[in-house]
Length: 407
Image 1 (cartoon, rainbow, N blue to C red):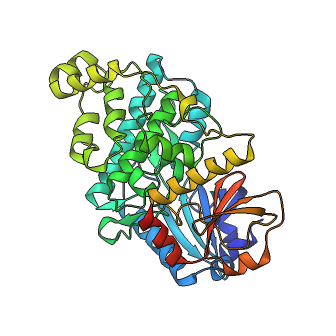
Image 2 (cartoon, rainbow, N blue to C red; image 1 turned 30 degrees about the vertical axis):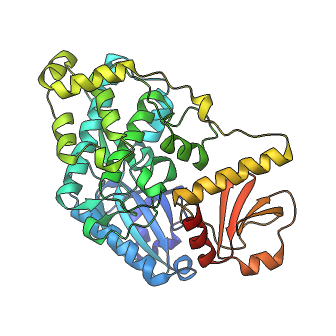
Image 3 (cartoon, rainbow, N blue to C red; image 1 turned 120 degrees about the vertical axis):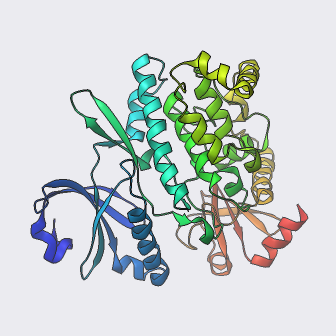
């Protein structure tokens, strides 16, 4: 099991694989030398050579640099970096669980006083982590429940501390290339629309994460079939309404974090002032009394309708002609939104068994039930999943640019 550790194998025991991504494998282990539990994050050199090796190596170096730069009790610590013949290895601080597991455990709302304290502590801890990043002029670009980890700070009192981790998508603000990156469910509207974005994208991602922590599902609805079309529909329509937690200051925070227009979204200064207010989620009357503008906002929140999420679910039809029109509408919406082709793109040829195309302005829709034609595979530049049974493909970049201008 420990062969990948090479000359470092004797430093570790109890090595158990716990996660695998496209670029890395993660193990839990015990470091005998330093008497500590840890994560071992492995980057395969062989796997890196199959892609752009220099780019991926620079990405690993940047993750190391930024993780080390952001020193805080609320950020996962990088203990050390190892290198063997076959791997680059990060030894990272171990945590007992992550926020995703807490969401599953507490799904359905955090209305008890104990859970309210838990929620407030999570917000304060992650705000501390974001403050450190902001001071270092770093944007995380992938804040989500899986990247927020939980440990017991005080076993006797049962207190838990939240830590932000995984700086694999992070970057200095000044070096931002505006590439579509992160996790779609938590990505800010400006990223999904392929617009220029800044560090405020992290505040949106935090808003989606906190909403999901409290209600048990993201602000796009409780359906297990939320896809990019549902998300884009919410972002573009007035159907994007938020549930109410009955905690005034928390509801205000969610509404300010989840402003779809970046320039109207809460600023970092306002965010820190709001969550670090001593009355935040502890004394709602005092909080509203000391912030007249928030009292006005909360009055508006109370008047908002409760979302009916079935209105924003994908509408499908048994009629083939109508279904083709639905697919055409979805494709045009996504192209007009500007996210295509970066979001959800996959390498040519990695999905097989597809045929039955309908051509819409040089974009091709496929039904995945039949055979994928070889001649199209050879000519394709972009190939992207839209729904479980629908794909779009553009044969030339010039065609895509033309379509964007025409829509």
